[in-house]
Length: 457
Image (cartoon, rainbow, N blue to C red; front, side):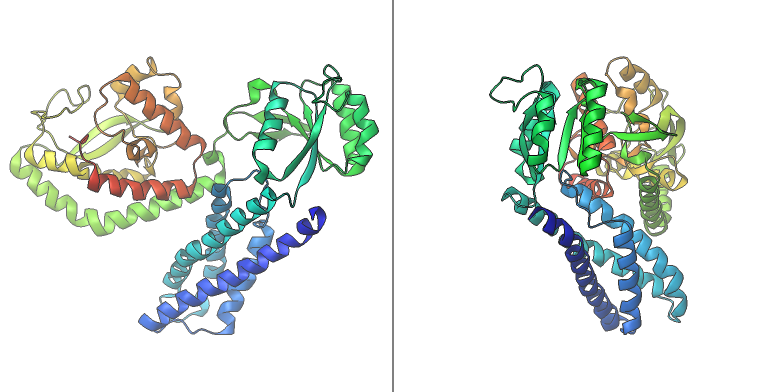
């Protein structure tokens, strides 16, 4: 089933994708027709959607589910494809509609397609993994060069049967007589034609001449060759490559948000979310809360504080003022029963409503909805000398909420362990960002605000 499955799976995936899209489209259209009487459900509507989705899905190769890809990667492909779909429909379909709700219908379709297509693609991904665990749709592989990293890779092949990699064995000159090795590297060239190989993994420690010989053989036999980096490059992150003419280099500290489309997706999410909050919440909240703040104490409505943002650049962070004006706001964190906190301020801090004006920061572009929380400049200077890799949390924009906050690290920093834990979680978020993680953190933030207020004061 090696070759046949690889040949037919893309077609099966795309056909299933189109069927699920049709179901999601029908569901959305029925809802809109029932409540609004729009749109007209006709073949042209389905024609636009199915044609554009076929072009996008095939063009972006959404059907290509990597053997080592996790479910998160499969889901990550979907929003980008939906953005393309909305763009094309906005250009070619919306202008043909006389009804002003055309664009809102598209948004409704997109929301439902996230649910329908997301469920379908996750289901396909999980079924494919189960299929491979059963020993089907496999790829035969050998490893040339037995080193620490090579041994680790072999262990992963044996443990992760869902990768569908059938590991045949090692070839190594220094360990040629070991029972766990099939022989020296020269013997590999004698055996190779009878192994039905798909993948050859080559240790970076092998001599250049041997690696070139392996690559020449593999090119002639249409076999994929992959180089196993040594221990210094076995980092817990996805490596990418840059090409300078014919010369390649490894980018060892790239992050997902270095990708232009990922940045566009995150920024679009920030703008839509923050604009909704500004129009429908802050428009009445600022006057109301401002009146209550003024009623209790003299001073400005907003507390504006300089904080470090992306690339350590200083920006002016907005909050509702929750304390009486004092000279220690930048250097002394709020503590439990802090006498500086006003009555209305205590409520604002406990409910985290004091952070609401930061949606203005998000809309302006200083902050993001989700990201590492920004600290004051004095706090940053202190932590930089105490916590390893502390500055790495400034690779991206700071957020109103973050992974550390939904994991319980919210409020006053009382000891070094707390800030180290925050930095570790922030680093994980930066290295593994996805729009799905942002949505998940937003949902968990609401739950935290409702059920866990002990550290907010």
